[in-house]
Image (tube, rainbow, N blue to C red):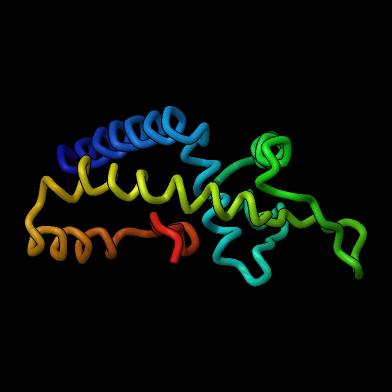
Length: 146
């Protein structure tokens, strides 16, 4: 149980620190960043809003609030499905992709400073192997944009 408690505490501390860095440097929350990253990697930079909610573990109202903020900032647009009026897509704009790239540079640097720098390469490989045994929700999102 000690290892599990340490994992939870570490996750919480790292998430808070990385979120504070993103908000302070770029005006994006870590959830904003993750949603924009998922959209950047999607075909045509678009995903159904319901799929985004499931990927980032937000409720329908939570993803709506998040996307509304990104829309106001000009980073995401809403698009209707041509074949099903019930379906709405979120689409990452060119401005959103540029913002994501800017934020990605400092975010990856933060991950390296707060996480990777505390381990050797061998320890990181071992840790990755051990954590891969745990159940995961969906594919998740990596930290950088190609």
